[in-house]
Image 1: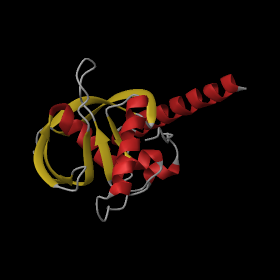
Image 2: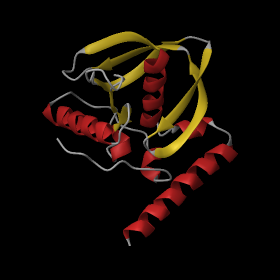
Image 3: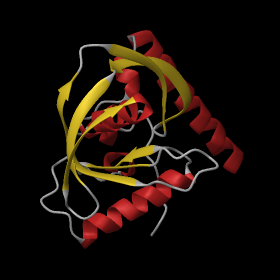
Image 4: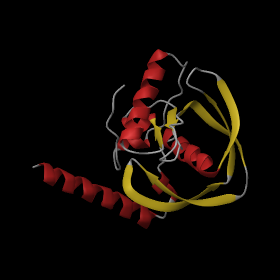
Length: 174
């Protein structure tokens, strides 16, 4: 397992649409293991493969609280089968938009289908933090960031903030 670099806005790779995985094999499981280690190191609760520059429809997630045992989850080729009309606001952040948080409205509940770590198909309903996180990560697979759901002004502000922080970090290294 290895910690990989996480791409940040405005990296154009983040806008790519990810390709479906043909089958869950050892190479995909190794990718998911690296993604999970990368997500934990960041730290975050969800990560899409495109965020580490791999344009495949793969997501990892762990919603365990700080004092709980890790509960890693793996999603290959996830898709939303159904959602409810009722929207729910939730404050979101993103490892690709570091240190920026904003409220986004998403369907309160979604029915999803995906392949797990072993390639077994799973169909289930997701709601609460799980529902928000899976929708957020699935957006990444389609080249959409959570800031794309915001007004143009807020989106530009977020990108400028991230770019400024990156410039400051580079200056510190010199």
